[in-house]
Image (cartoon, rainbow, N blue to C red):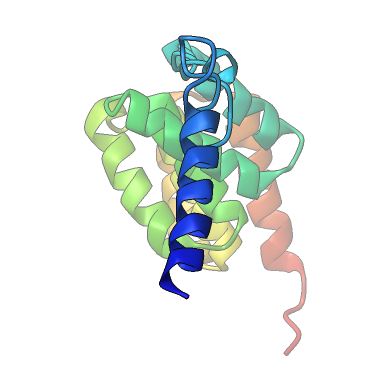
Length: 170
């Protein structure tokens, strides 16, 4: 009885060794794939720093704010001191109503861009979206003082004025 098991074991071992010893370069690997089929991993793709930011802007323009937030987040990881990427990230957070994260992004953007008209305008718009019209007006007016010819700021002030005149409903 022992000899029968020994013979079966020896036959299996011979079959296994025969499969491993192929044509000199080991036709089969331990994963059952020929060595000629194993390819090295491709090198990681290089993306220019501004490509992620470009994709983020396109997503934002197409009103895909969740996607825009993802790409702006990636852009600030690639270039941490890019004020434009931080502003885009903050605006994306505003649009998906994550105002807590928008405030953090605005704080970072402020470190790099300062109190410019665009920064102040975006902050004002953030507060407009939140319904805090007093703070929105304060930021819009500061932005207007810095750039009175900016039509976007003028439009936001007009939108603020119109939103005050609309009745609030519960």
